[in-house]
Length: 381
Length: 132
Ligand SMILES: [Zn+2]
Image 1 (cartoon, each protein chain N blue to C red):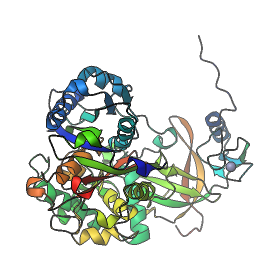
Image 2 (cartoon, rainbow over the protein chains, first blue to last red):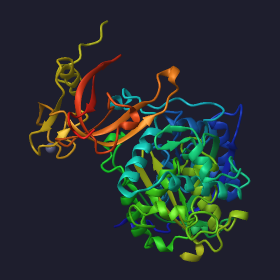
Image 3 (tube, rainbow over the protein chains, first blue to last red):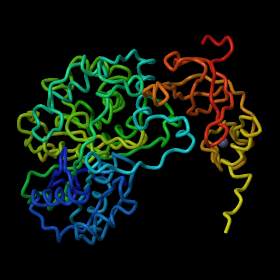
């Protein structure tokens, strides 16, 4: 047996979004419910058929119970693994396994948060680090950025061009929160928070919910929407506290990426569109390198040259990403929704022509846990 | 009912007790020699439970650093650094005695024991003649 046995065994047949940007008065469960309803409607599947529930959030210690109760779903399989924002991308692998083994027939992966209008409780802080008052999560990513600049000569301008690219994509997405034009100079001039990261190197804080529906591949063939297959998926972790990260310039994506590509039987050159969890500008550089899209230390020059922006060779975060579209705290679900949207050819003005393979990459904790998923349209089977 | 007295052998209790005596001590694995931070009940490298507390040299190098910006009326900017100790462990701390912006990656630093609201705390200062 190997992970490749799960290749193409399950597919995404529904996707939904809700409460994007601002959802005043709503709870995180309200907009999660709307997103699940939208995803099921998109799939043409009745809620009564849902028997697999995969969810996590920063509000509930017992997320699958709280969400199951709200949705009125009594799942046969429920999984609430919480490794941070990558969780939902990771859940896709477990959903595929549960479907393949016949433990469930219709799996829903879902998330909602009203972090902007409703606030959210601070998670537990590492006891040996909090006394030095790092401004988390920003300071942890600042440590990685400082080290990357030290080792590879990466500049603040390089980092800024990630935020500029995200805005260019967001301008093409009517659901994106920040759509005004942005320049490298604007990013450099924004208020410094934790050197070398300034305000515009940091993701948005918005409301938002997303949900996707998965079924076995045989059922997916008859789906209402063009199915999007799970080709590969892998997760790796190295630490919780940033001081324990083995190398600040190499994330666990260097392990999750190759495993996901191996499972899918693909290589980076096969990928048409990338959704990389951009909590901070430095993330995109680290993931491009760790996932094999350029050599270690070369991502700064790559992004500064416009490769990831609209019109570039390597379209990254076509919805605008966490920097410009939506970021309610755990962004991973939105990488899946946008990857599915692109592979259906439903991206409208931001559609990447002929996209057949999407890479959706989730980041959790403080660069701690990484999940890489490869999604494919029916044409690549 | 009063809560039970913390065991003096609990790793976190012992670490703080050493600091209260003015000693920055960490566990070193009897099995593989790894210096361990943060204190634990088993070696994160080889899994051994045979760990011996040893006084750390206190010598270290700044592995990465950031200045957390804060308004002057709230105390002003301050440094947070990740320090790699000479014996190998890495820990979060801060470098004192210089402006936050003057702390650089690769700077040689020496541990000193300071105090905050929660008790004694390891911080660092630029090493004497260490190119600071
Ligand atoms: Zn050991």
